[in-house]
Image 1: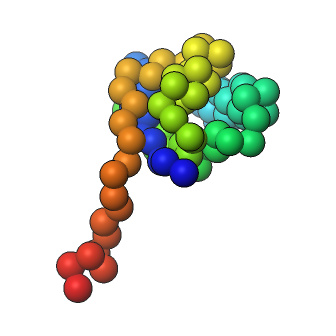
Image 2: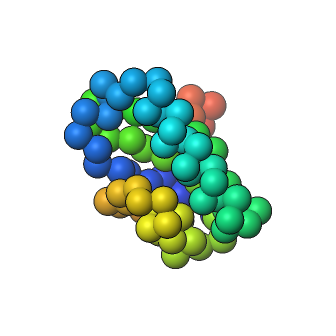
Length: 90
C-alpha cells in the first residue's frame, strides 16, 4: 500500500497547546473511521508553521478527501517512492 507525506501549512503550529493538538487528532481519527480501514495515519511531525503527516492509503485522492472532510489543509501530498536511512549507506 502506498505511503504519503502530507504538508499542512498552519501558522503557529509549534505553539499549539496539547489540548488543541488532541482535538485535531480526535477529529482526524473520527474522519479516518468514517473513511474505512484502507487509510491509516502513521504519525505527524509538528514544526513552527507546518505539520508533516505520514499516511498509508491506496491513493492520493483518499488522502485529499480525508483533509477535505476534516477541514485540514493539505498544501502538498506526495507519494513516498522509497525510504532510506543510515543502513542504506552500508
